[in-house]
Length: 259
Image (cartoon, rainbow, N blue to C red):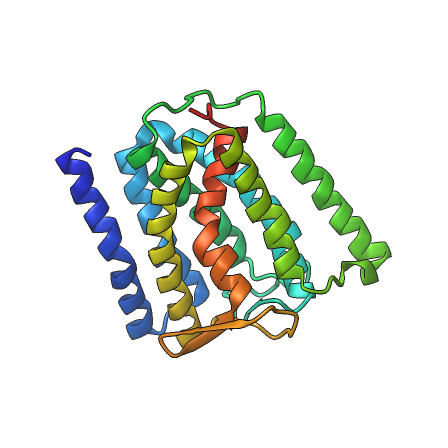
């Protein structure tokens, strides 16, 4: 890794602690935390990797918005997590903080730009790869199904141990399958995951200290306590530990060249 990239990586490693300190000292809201924790690093990565902006933004929007409709909505319905405050006068679908939409898009862009800049030297520069349409069709179909069921048969949306099930089916299993197909991807995805483990854990502890995030349900396999704060094992394993690695595998399969 070149000296300039090592400096940029050092800046990004320090930044989550700076962002956390700013949020804690100013009693930031979820909306301002999204700007501090995510938008600023996204701008930083966009400056470092300007030719990735269009491609990264497109994929992040395609992945981020359906994520809110499907996973975040069902997570709220099943009491797996809840964002306690919003800067907006209404909530999406009556439950979701609008901040969650920006959070999902910015986080996706940050993860993928980080991966591309530091670890992927052979990226596909095509804005619209052939596999991408299959991801769109799948996400649109599932989103419509969730909306229709919520209107006509809402009882079907109550899923026991939802976080565990969605983590196994949507994060762990596709990630392992892609690693079997492309073993060379494991190392790069792991390195990306190491950074975002630090990032996500810092964000999690900050959110819990400021009361933005609660876990009102009971369908969890266990609890983890770190730095005096407790959260479900599923939150630690699927969100903090695996999300970035999973995002890399989704991106490589649907939007990059898998090299």
